[in-house]
Image (cartoon, rainbow, N blue to C red):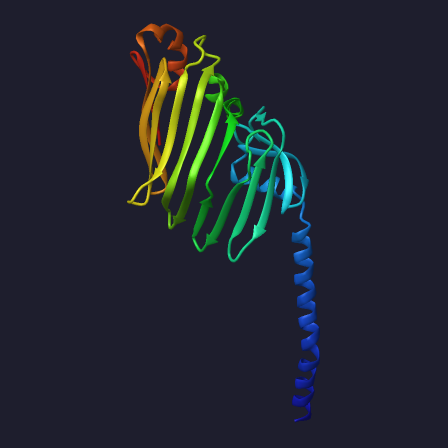
Length: 269
């Protein structure tokens, strides 16, 4: 009886110490996370994009930081191009979600707001309404074929709101996103500009999304359709020059896809 009483007393006495130790560990972990350096975001972006997105010269913390933003051809690739100015981010934890506000010195007039909600074998990404303008020249940092085509011109990205839900290898898209490419030119053609184009993404009732590429104006005609189903992207389109500009656009058509007479067939996925 006395031995059992002593054991119970020992457990009772050690319990406050155990709780105190657990509290100290949790406090230390929170302090580490609260003051975690911005380089954590830099490393996460590099790993998640397989080396294609490079954040350099990071400053601040994990929650409030900034960095130079650049694109490369992936792991082990040489070169790359950076946006002018810096990209800033603000992260905030919500109830089971992460709220993100992104700003770019060169390209956004207002912060772009995102919300990421992870789950068991699933995640949801919500993109708030917004618009921004990006230089097409930065795409050359991705390597072939972008560094050969070397596009010049503004890329206007707009959305009235977009939700992307991934669950058990299936993707459901709600909302829309459009990319207007205005007055594009290329180092492979003396014809300037080539034209203006729009690439739109539209969520579908079946759960996937549809892609559409169309020409707004110009001598280089681009068109195509595609979709995002079962977690995979597929796209079929063509680039075609009008009769008066075929000679000036021949080199560009050879690079853009499989050449078929006056047109070039573009396939993805």
